[in-house]
Image 1: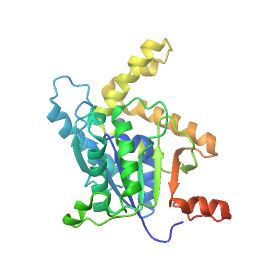
Image 2: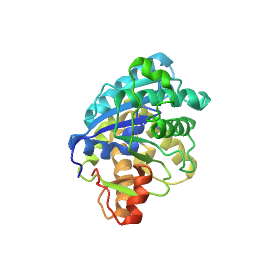
Image 3: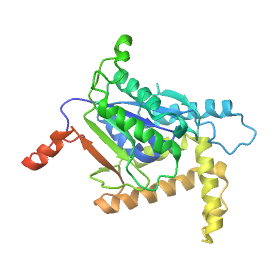
Image 4: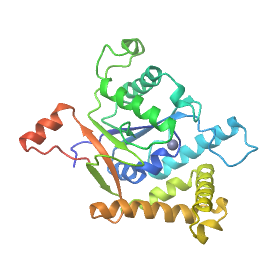
Length: 277
Ligand SMILES: [Zn+2]
């Protein structure tokens, strides 16, 4: 257990990324008194089933859903949106996106960063890949004063981020599992605040199911607008699967890097670093 509450920053591409990938862990950290802040890189404006919704209307709706999801988790709902176009983040120059992430880090001054794992395989979403590289690199160098020295003119000082938690759909080199058994309901509740994305998720699963030939009547006959029972089953199934690997009822897992060369030093010396959870 840590001796003082830390600040945690989550940098993601989309409104629902945090909830899907680390919602239980973040809720648990919030309960432990950690200050949690979130930066979302895109406007999420393609995340709806409603063909008549304009891009602007969708972006506004999803911004509001992100705030409700954050509140459900116990996260500060004052989310920073970087304003990039949904589905095209990888077309933003890495140097530009990294600068935006570094600026957020120097402003919010987190001890811990959560983001997508840039080294995990099989990530099909270009936005996830793009934000992963930018956030990881920004966190690795935000304490170097000559990286974007112009930030000092705005009163933003260099800042050291000691711990990085990376998540992925196909995680590699997992070295941290978090027991979210007491938080699985809150994770589901937070996800269900993302109305447009959850409708899209159920409709997408129905397309996958139809193509697969598998018979799952509960999914096949579901109305995407009545998404909650299916989302609940899906999140419990995923969380229980991860939990089985770690002897927990429900879990989330991460590849975690801590304190640069000190982590290796501690390991080789048989010393144990203090843990957050
Ligand atoms: Zn996403």
